[in-house]
Image (cartoon, rainbow, N blue to C red; front, top):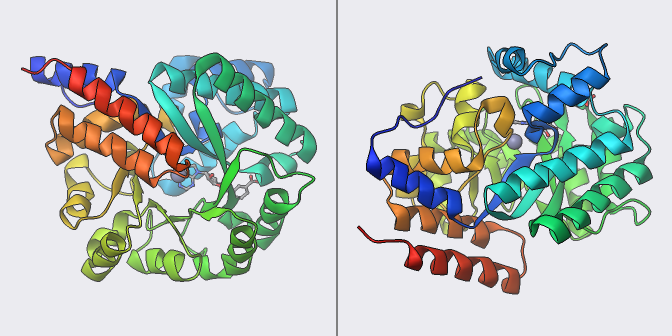
Length: 355
Ligand SMILES: Nc1ncnc2c1ncn2[C@@H]1O[C@H](CCC(=O)c2cccc(C(=O)O)c2)[C@@H](O)[C@H]1O
Ligand SMILES: [Zn+2]
């Protein structure tokens, strides 16, 4: 596990963390299986003792230490292997929403990889029913609104793209909460343009395009995501910092980046937090949103990501509130939904004790 917690620097740091903890937030880049808490992973690992995943939380922290991005995906897939029944899917989704609500997340677009579940034998209809049941129950019980992004696990090939777009667009499967279409997994050796026909179909069916790009490869992948996949937001986009023209394009066309600082360190996509390019993004006028990606696997949560961002961007409470509003603005909520959370953020910030 990566300890990227901001070192405690005294009262100011504690106050900012308290402010963040209570701040209403939206999260735009967080993976379903990657959000399984140690308790859920341990429970599933105990239920399926044939798995390599340790059920003891301390051993799990060790298990979630990655040597590189490929190692991260290998471990990630061993956790995917623990999700075997529709009830596993429902429990995971519901518990993820509970953890979000505890962090004052009002709205989240959760990335699911339905191909990984259907290829492991979960019936597609039962999968959809499980996530929809969890979404509705979680909204009623916790007040957190969930929406779905279905992503293609690119390295699994075009067969996975075909299955993902089928599940996302065929009325027999497409869940009510689905808003967007993504592409994840390793980028090296998995060129983005090959997925254009699948994104075209998803976009034609009314879904938003939100591929990962520039996480582990250069800015040309981000260009491909923009031009070939018609990306409306970019997952990570870290290497955009190496291309000033790209930064100017992202800023001019208001294409937000879904920045996940601790993830980038944990997967070794970026060497140290100090080298993270988030400051270059804001300096170039790019709309930055802060996200947690696979929080328990990276030893973080959304609140900690905001604290990390505040340190890297040198923000006070008001600056952090602006970051939270960026995520609302970049979300696929309707205008009324955006206005409601933005107003809540403003009210909370105005009431925060000034020092
Ligand atoms: N930081 C991240 N950056 C990128 N992706 C991330 C990140 N975090 C989590 N993911 C997830 O990892 C999945 C990868 C799954 C994958 O590659 C694969 C390959 C071959 C077979 C199968 C299978 O299921 O049989 C799966 C992606 O779809 C994505 O949702
Ligand atoms: Zn991701």
